[in-house]
Amino acid sequence: MIAIQRSYAVEKNDFTKAGEVSSNIKKIMKQVGVEPEIIRRVSVAAYESEMNIIIHSYGGTIDFMITPEYIKLVACDRGPGIENIELAMKKGYSTAPQNVREMGFGAGMGLPNIKRCSDEFIIESEYKSHTKLVLVFKQSM
Amino acid sequence: MKLSVVKELLNAEVLTGHEQLDRNVTNAYAADLMSDVLSSLDDKTILLTGLTNTHAVRTAEMMDIHSIVFVRGKSPDEETLKMAETNGIVTMKTDMILFVASGILYNEGLRGAVIVR
Ligand SMILES: Nc1ncnc2c1ncn2[C@@H]1O[C@H](COP(=O)(O)OP(=O)(O)OP(=O)(O)O)[C@@H](O)[C@H]1O
Ligand SMILES: [Mg+2]
Image 1 (cartoon, helix red, strand yellow):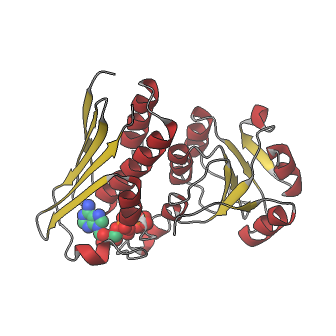
Image 2 (cartoon, rainbow over the protein chains, first blue to last red; image 1 turned 30 degrees about the vertical axis):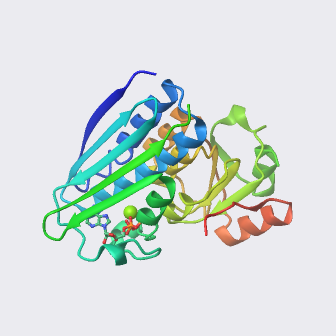
């Protein structure tokens, strides 16, 4: 398998395109023949990360890389950052407003689920600055 | 349970994937918040939801969920149906509320999707 790298822009509040990046990432993984169970975990993590940028941030990017050994996702945004990461990581904690909840988001399950899906999970956030997620998924090939 | 049976039991109208009603489901998840669904583990799950926007279909796409039942008589818009079609997802709608639709399917042998603790 050759290494593949992609970089996507994700805009704030762009609900019409929501999920397109993750859908794209999933297609690439299918094309190169990544194991279905890994595809699922990466897809779910990508989708939750993409939605978090759309809903909670001022916009950002998702970088995606496949090598024979691992798959890496980096989701980075331009703020406003997370004030209390420990709280944000709690199942059920959400600051999503009512109109966003009506669209089916805001269960407060995104971040814990991203962590569960990935083999390595790093969250870095500076309040009033940025949030960055680095996710690694091992491939047993 | 075949999707054709689900359709009969829920008195549902099939919206997309008419040719795929012989697909089998064993488990179900009923929810309106999709991140809850995204933390479910197994495939072969059918999703029952009152959420009729593209997010429901995207969630199914990411999870390899191949069928969705929209409850409370709500109809998804064109774009949502097109997305379901593209992804080979069977969708149907029923006038029943989520509780009743779930209860009927449970009674006929479907079980809850396996979730993460
Ligand atoms: N990129 C981000 N920038 C700023 N705040 C964020 C970001 N991602 C998450 N948060 C904060 O962390 C909280 C928890 O995030 P999480 O993804 O777990 O739940 P949610 O997005 O609120 O709901 P769900 O993901 O279940 O739809 C959010 O409500 C928000 O306050
Ligand atoms: Mg989220």
